[in-house]
Amino acid sequence: MPEIIKQWFIKHMPVEEDIGLHENKAFIRWIGYPLLAILVMVIAVTWNLFETGIYSFNKEFEMSFVTLNDFAKYYAFPIASLTVPLTFGVMFNRFHSSKQKAKSNEIVEQNNIANNFFNHYKYFKEHCEVLEKRFNFLNLEISCEILYKKLFKGSSVSNFITDIELSENDEFLTYIHNEIDTFIQHVDKVGIESVAYTSSHPENDDYYEKHTLNESYSFSFRQSGIYFRQTINEPVDFDNLLQSNFDIIFMLLCFNGVSNFEIIGGDFTKRYWELHQNKFLNFYVSYQN
Image 1: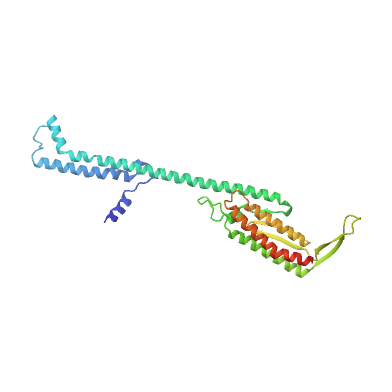
Image 2 (image 1 turned 120 degrees about the vertical axis):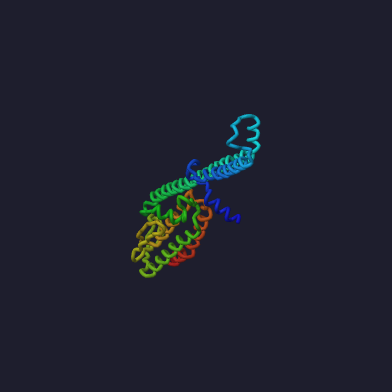
């Protein structure tokens, strides 16, 4: 039973914070229903007074201390009950004001989240533009929209996020791992030519070997909105590109708007150099020997 009353009250007496107090139909009900009950009570008391002969249309109307005292005595309860709709009106006004304040705070918070999101993206875009200029020798291109959504998954105008998930490192490193495998397969297929070069100083009889691929290799990186492409003729060039690849990704993770940089950056650095050591460096040393 109490639950039924509660649901009826919520349905028929709601506090609508979206509209003004005077436009709330429930506000009229909160005051009107008690007033209606008091009016019925006054009518019942008056009817009883007429039935008992205390009041009569045959008596003359008299305004005196005695009649006013009798009126106050007879109608004491209905008069006292008038405080009920007044109290309900004040309560409704407080509830309405509180809900409006809560909604106002919610809107302000949503606006702050939206502003933080757009400012975060703006500074991230500027960070990407700086990287493109720094690595213009690679013709680096960064699609900020794609990369931002990739790195800051779930971030939006209503859900501002500054963490980067560790799984992003998995995708970057897997791509680099596959590219190293592809390059090694290319070298095994086309072979390497070693050419001896003498020192540039005539008095020095030392010489060094230059290792050249018999067929050029096209290195391309296309991942998460990051793109660059280079053609290389020497294995050492591939190593240099791997270094540039590391620098680009690490500097992206260095963006000041990344709140978990120490974790994500440390994880990427550790795993990248392990991959470089175990996968490429062993191969690099073996062909030189």
